[in-house]
Image: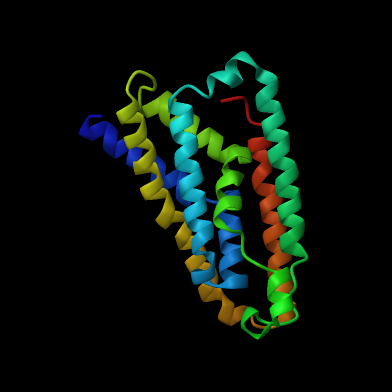
Length: 208
């Protein structure tokens, strides 16, 4: 990869990673509700799951969508259904007490998304698929160079992690303003609405 292409790709990775989307909206909500430290497994899960996806796409997984268009439709609507579930979970999350004041039972019923769940979510996240496919269709020649594919995926993950982490950090700073259960409840509802809105452009986007 030439220096010019590397710079262009890095900028692409940064812009697509830091702009609003399902992952970043969930990270903002996680930062508010659970704090930055408890959101770290979620951050690592996003970047790790996305890195594996980029490697798979670079090795030709996206050809399945080309050969079997129905598979992309199924993936897209499965992702939409899961986003609806996540939006409902955020909107109805317990806000009667700040997380630090909850009992053990309340904490057990209201936990941040873990590493495995965050990693698995990338496979039904339409924005993640578009980012991964665009990386190879625009910047990097896929196929016949596994080392380049792995390097590209690793660079994307390195850029992606602090970008999504920034949203969690911002959310954790907002906790001071959202200590009141009513305000936190309104915030969670707003995040749920934004999460649903974020999937609409991707839901009706053409197949990558």
